[in-house]
Length: 155
Image 1 (cartoon, rainbow, N blue to C red):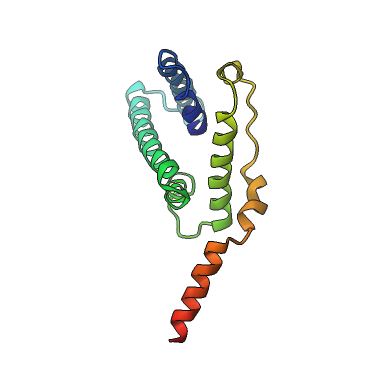
Image 2 (cartoon, rainbow, N blue to C red):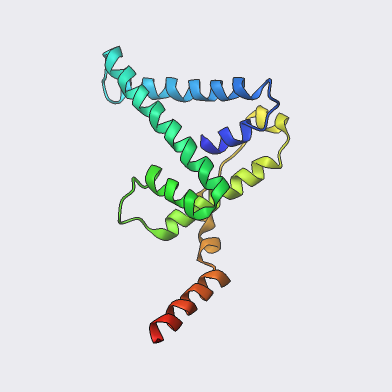
């Protein structure tokens, strides 16, 4: 949903807020329906409390991911770690890297699409696991950092 939200922001100013609101409405109608059907929460006041909490989480996710898009992969990975992996200590770093790489790649791909293509809704999202080979490539920067660490430990 976040990736699509990023692309909808690029729509003309007169259209972007409407598209974004409809996406949010659709998501929250579905969430409310699941609260009723799957969790048997019949009281509207309790559902509303859960939906307000979910909306607060969504707003936090937006801020965290937006900051990551601007400041770099380490910041984006931190936001993904909190929001997707629950901030747990046992996160698989390759999986985290796959999600970050996937997000950047899909956002770039959507940026290259015309607004009409996006509006038609024929977008098919792939699998973040497809990024495994990309994530496993050793970077020159990482090699230089590891070399510096070894050089410092020798002194």
